[in-house]
Length: 241
Ligand code: GLN
Image 1 (cartoon, rainbow, N blue to C red):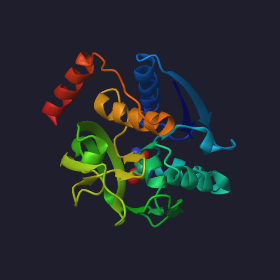
Image 2: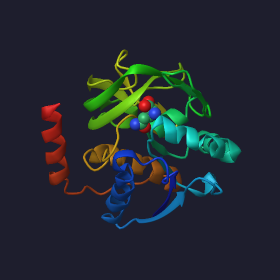
Image 3: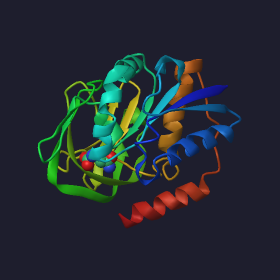
Image 4: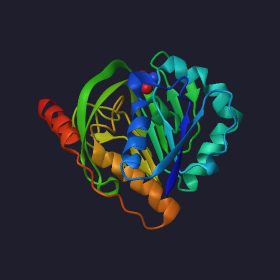
């Protein structure tokens, strides 16, 4: 078995080491004897997303989001929409998560028209939402408790046809108001959780991998790993938040 993973915009969307999630995806597959091919798609590259089994997009500041807009609307927008409708799993973080929605309007009134692949939009607020936080994934996403770190000014609002990834237990999540965190639509996992999300949340990582393997191979199983160190890190952080 093999998964072909696409890392979109690794050149501009890589805040707080979001790319560590790629290392984690690959390593947890390697431990099960499953091969990975990783392809990086920076600004200016041609994208044929139907070639991939999983797509990862990290986060970036307002500035980076504006820098990639022109490139995004030169064809990657259509590719992303088609891939999502086709059920290709996506993991998208913060700025990359916002990018899947209709638009982001910054606090000082600049508007980034995004791609409307997922029914959500984001509006900047005066106060940044920063800190460690935790949320419980919904049933459709495995129900695990996730610990993470968020840093955004955008408040994201979900449309009626999409579900949140989870429910906020501590911290802000999508907007600090309705207790929703992230999004689940088709096989998209969108979240505000930056940096090493997957290494310290192995259940969520395996859920995403299983989604990709089942889409490609029909039935798939992931053999259990010794996650003692990962669980200890997770529980230690969860207890402190
Ligand atoms: N620019 C967005 C915001 O502040 C995203 C930030 C990020 O990816 N950390 O809302």
